[in-house]
Image (cartoon, rainbow, N blue to C red; front, side):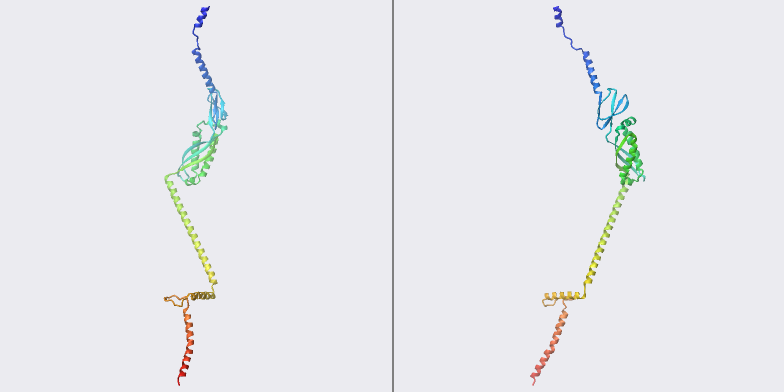
Amino acid sequence: MSTVTDLNRNAPRRGPQPGRIIGWSIGALLVLLVAFNSYTTVEYGHVGLYKTFGKLNDNVKEPGIHLKIPFFQSVIEVNTQVTKAEADSTASSKDLQPVSTHVAVNYSVNKASAFNLMNNVGSSYDNVIINPAVQEIVKEVTARYPAEDLIAKRDIVAAEISDLLTQRLAKYDLIVREINIVNFKFSDAFNQSIEAKQVAQQQALKAENDLKRVQIEAKQLVAQAEAEAQSLKLKKQEVTPELVQLKQIEVQEKALDKWDGRLPSVTGGATPFIDFTSVIRSNSSASTSQAPVSQQSTESETTQTQP
């Protein structure tokens, strides 16, 4: 008995068999796969829709973590944030001018109707619905206006496009947030005609301003002349012969105060400011009155000397 026991003790011990290790590994891997496929995450700004064996479920999931059936069920995320779609449209204006329009549309998906949109249209709704609708409506609105009005009434044109597009996309549960007409592009000939017209308008405006300025200056001159005439009229009413004579006397008195007794050596056609003629005449009359007196005295002296 002891010999057998010793033989058993000396026999090699058997470890885990390779088959069991592989089985355990596969089992653990399957558990991990099932665990990771048992839930999904819906990002913010999106909603989720279950898809089971190709069938879409109308149960809309909000952002967060949600359970699902592993390997048989998936979640489709639908973006509900404001998204921009751009489209180019070529049309003719009311006056048959070719117009190329670049439009940007800001839109969003109605959360409550995300199932209807995805089930009826699919995830490519921007190319299937939005772009064709924008091009058609832009052509329709552009044809209502002459080319010049498209530029001058840009806001009105954008509002009409927005109204029509809102009605069109509401059928598919798409909400139009804003319409922006990025650019109107016209032919070179039309651009040249617009530029020439603007130059003519600027020149006409300048001429009108010049005319207004001339008219204002003329009115100012007339007003100034009327004021001067009125002032002169008032001054003439104040002037009387007595006032003129008084002014002349004042001037002569001032001149006599400054006169040194000598006559000017320069003669001319102008009348001297002092009336020297009256002065000379007064002196002459004084001399004449003294002459008989001297003559009488001389005769008396002669009579007295004769015997």
